[in-house]
Length: 177
Image (cartoon, rainbow, N blue to C red; front, side):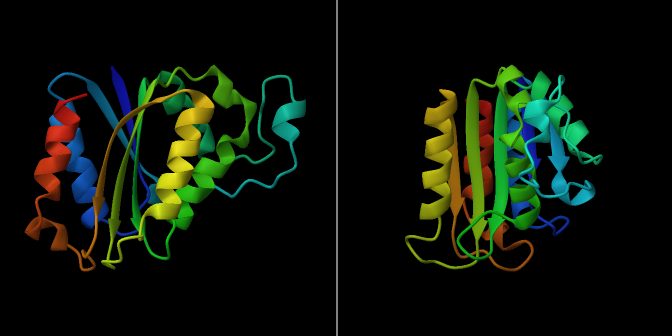
């Protein structure tokens, strides 16, 4: 299986990246894994112009790095979304990428499974509720299997996640794919 991990953290070597890397290490034993850090990409937000619906090849009017993301998604059997949670939502950088999937090119992807890796500094029980609701809606809409979720609360500073069981859990989740 080809697994694509989208890391939405603007912080290099932060908790989200560590969690995604642990998942990747677990999955690499049996699958091909590609990781894209959206902080390294220049992706503008969706403009809502629907040019992609009118163009013959579903080309977006924006010329940016989203072309790379589309190419990776076209090869993926599984998508892993990894994001920090700053204010009850995924990072702005990752949200821009996800919103650009408004493009009908998404209908050509053959993604059958998705997983969710979230990291937040707060400890509130409902910290991830809005994101998991959107995730579940996407699973249903695209008829995609839930590959699992690792939701980590109370990790704010870089490296805090090392003091939890989350890295081992992510490694094991990756290995079960």
